Length: 223
Image 1 (cartoon, rainbow, N blue to C red):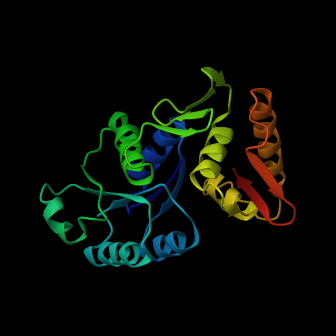
Image 2 (cartoon, rainbow, N blue to C red):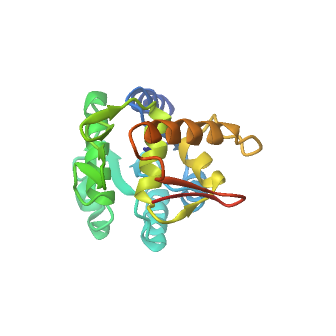
């Protein structure tokens, strides 16, 4: 699952990124509203953490952009001000949660996951596709009770494709979704082919060989 952290505070941001990556989240960062707006317009995120350490004006611009863009990303607002919920009351339908600093890192993955499940999967704890069960809390995939051994990237890839069922997803879109800030390489997409190949092989081994379809020169489609 892909997260964007918008914050002007370098060390707390670095701590959040390191902790979330250990919990198998893919993270990107933006230290100001210019970078944030560019990323929000270009990429899809499962959840956005907006730290009000950026100026009130910048935070308002970001909130307006999310509202105007009709983004489906979950949104968590972070602040050291206890009155924070009042400050974002005009964006109630877009703000899913509030976190008060200092943030307890051990609590962060659960709060982020809860927001994502609520926003993207309507609160469901599992995604069911015929015989395939994607457990969103445990981050496991099984067929008829048999758990498929997937890497973190393979799980994220499967969830991304399944969440966009029947839509054609380009290789660039997949690369952007799976990549962290320091790992994006648009010129070499061999790692996409490798992840797709391994995922298809593992699904085929449990009788789900036709779930991922390759469309030559276009991308991939699930279902």
